[in-house]
Image (cartoon, rainbow, N blue to C red):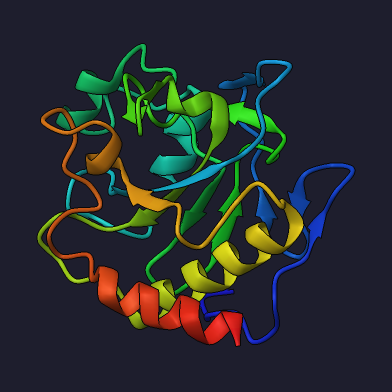
Length: 194
């Protein structure tokens, strides 16, 4: 469960779900606009509490039941209605929260190449991490395999349209942060294309 994928990911086109990964469906989702298709992949960084890894707090945040009394930071999250399509944990394990044909609430106020409301046309992938701590090899391998599967399943997606949250919400968001090695991800993506 904590290893990078040894086989390519498979997406069920009917359900928009990844085969063989943990599913924790979030209520924080809705339909995309009628004319919207996934055209952008947005990478994020997340840890709850900040700087801590491995707990089920991200599940609880995305499902809207993060207990504010469990940690002082959680009180700042009360009322947040957020989600992402996927989470890649430090060891490479994947959890899916929102089917790909639906809109996850990950981007917030955002813009990409002049288009606003990026949630409408993007897929959000959270990487368990922080701006300052290096992401793991398993996360790069898993992220590349996920992106390859998404691009193979949705002709509107492209390996060239993968951005960070900081790219679509500059000044408001910094993730996945300076610790994220974009060149490493691009190398892995090139290998999945060959």
